[in-house]
Amino acid sequence: NKDGKIYSITQFASKATDGSSGSLGALYLSEVTQDLEGKLEVIRTAAFDTSQISGIASVGGGLTTSWGSHLGTEVLVVDAKVLDKDADADKKLNDDIFNAVDGPVLRFIRYFGKYFNGGDVTARETRDIYGFHPYRYGYVFEARLIGDSKVRTGDLKRHYAMGRRM
Image 1: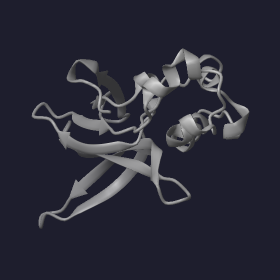
Image 2 (image 1 turned 180 degrees about the vertical axis):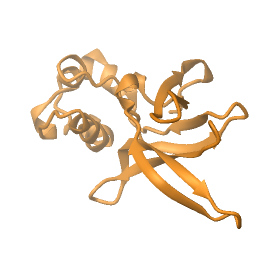
Image 3 (image 1 turned 135 degrees about the vertical axis):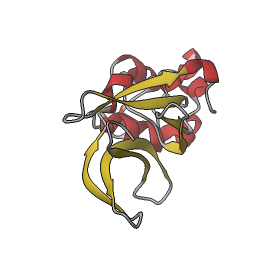
Image 4 (image 1 turned 30 degrees about the horizontal axis):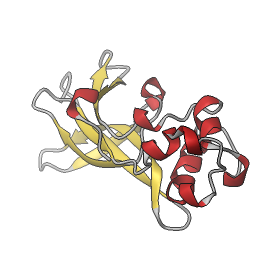
């Protein structure tokens, strides 16, 4: 409840076309009304711009804090150590060592407008050319409302001190 209005923050995880867990997450901010019987109705919904924290990975649980913000968790399952090994940095992503990360990494990079097939890119390229740094993801993030009552936007922050899920 902010400025006499009710807001809801909803987080979603994507699903890959093969049915496995996706690698992208999304947040939406909805303004809600409530009638005298308690029935809620969404009036408008807009996506949070998550680019301020380089996007969010597949999300897990979320909750409302006692101070009114939203805490969510990223549950990205990419093993960052595999992509950071110098010995394997020039192997193509579809080589055996990268089978576990091939799908999630490529799907995540495509979110940022970079399209290629796994056999066309190495771990070093995902990091140095395409900017995919898996250590950026897997943390608790906080979304809070900012702005006046007419124009609500969100502010996102990652909480690194709470640790990385892996």
